[in-house]
Length: 276
Image 1 (tube, rainbow, N blue to C red):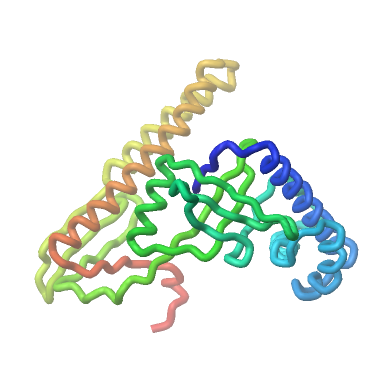
Image 2 (cartoon, helix red, strand yellow):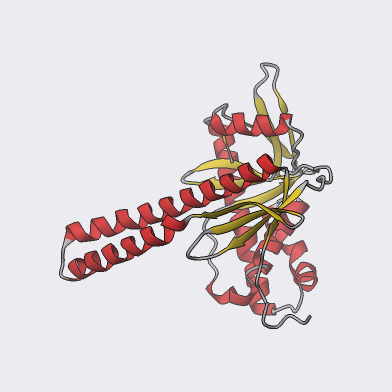
């Protein structure tokens, strides 16, 4: 996610104008979906495209993006309400480059016949983005997103990696509940290493559950302090579990590198219905 520099008044007005037009395109397309009830996305395109483009003045690609966004909510079309703008732009709708002063900028065409530059802020997000680009990652589309009263640009970076070489040994990972991961490093019939990672997570979650029960009983009696503690406890549990999962993943990778192992993760999904 890339943050933008403060925009000039004219650019801000242009983006606000685009936001209103795009929301109008969503609303018009939703009306066609609700009242005409087409059976397929192509049928919705046939009955809505000409009218929506004439009413909004948006480029063809963006009108189709709005149609796809509406169609993705087809199953709950009577409860849909669009409030924020999130539009995907393809290489046809934008250009990425640097100014004469070597400042990064996206030149986008979001309204028919009107192109303007979106300057990117050189902060931590930009530094990470630049490092990925130097490593060979690339992107083919961007998402222009209205977030907390400002605009940001989101990208999905991709890179083609060579076929991995087969390791000298195999590191098997069994994901569980009592242990986040039980790993075994084997080479032939020999077991080189066995580790049980994340044991303390289950115990810690049990402690958090008991504390939550006590706080909930106090909150039900009207304790404001207990309600605040419950909110803090929720954030603490989420952050703690996420941190332990990252630690476990890093330990697995570190062990695999140490033994030059290929990683095999066990899955028991559909095990009972599997044949053979």
